[in-house]
Length: 214
Picture 1: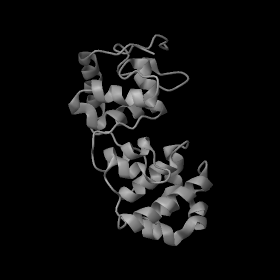
Picture 2: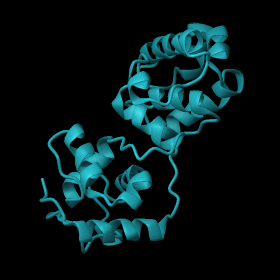
Picture 3: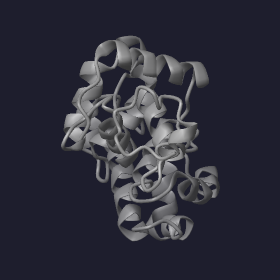
């Protein structure tokens, strides 16, 4: 684990991220808050590209909790069977759709506690929805962010909760909204797991990672 970088270094890192991509976007396709919840729930242990491929047709026929319930578990399963753990995910999507339809009038709640109470929705999923749909400065820590945070020293921590806290505590407030997107994209395309592309890295000179590739 790298040591925690100082405030000025972190500000410079995010200034560079911002300069390269001022408005980073999540890569999961969705048409409203409900389809975002479903897409993020389906993305656990799956790629965004794989989820998008499955949900394009699904969201054309089921873009509300009521329509998803009408489609039913078997109908949903047919749409998402290319996604890992699809049977369990189908059960959870139907359950959360029923709760949203019966308890929330078909509207997705905008509180973390309410979102986390939905089947198949954990803290990471809730944070993604809060950030992408309601533009809350919530930090959804996935494997990419965990890796980048620890390698670079931007947000070191022994677990995802510690990394989330480190981002909240150390990333300047004006960069909080997009912080997790910048870190995810950096981890997905540059600071990759097995052989990071250090030569092409925007923050190579500021990063604490000792085993940089040439």
